[in-house]
Length: 148
Image 1 (cartoon, rainbow, N blue to C red):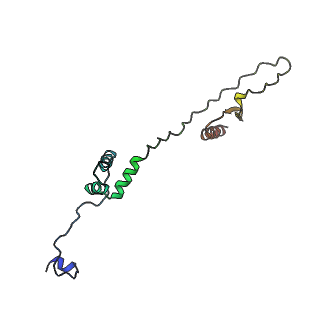
Image 2: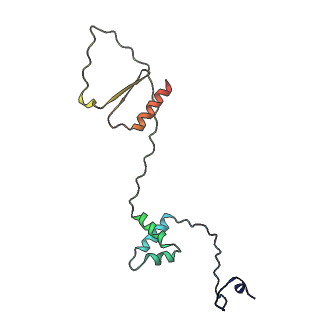
Image 3: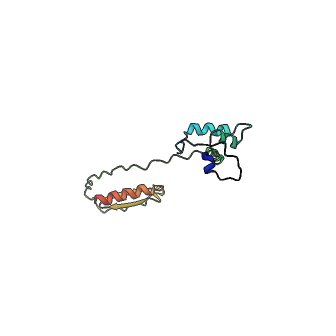
């Protein structure tokens, strides 16, 4: 008695003639970007079909279609690194010269200063101009509060 007679239950009296044995490790293959680009380029050649190219490289057609779709996407913009924090240096306040007569009235700020926010935390003045990054301003405020 043979193994095929014991394990295969079929109405066909003829035993199985071919067995396929998988000897690989069964883990995922890792494809480099260059290999993927070469396979994708081959799938776009005239006369080639995605299924034929996928079969040639033992891929599923869905995987090759996903690689092709990814290749058509524009390169994602490289995210800018987080803003680096520069420590604030606090200098001793300069002494004001003695007043000479009545105090002068402050002139109105010019139009170019429109939209400027001025903060004072424990004697340290901070001016935030238009278009300042909110995360950076918040980090500076937290740092000033921490030093007080």
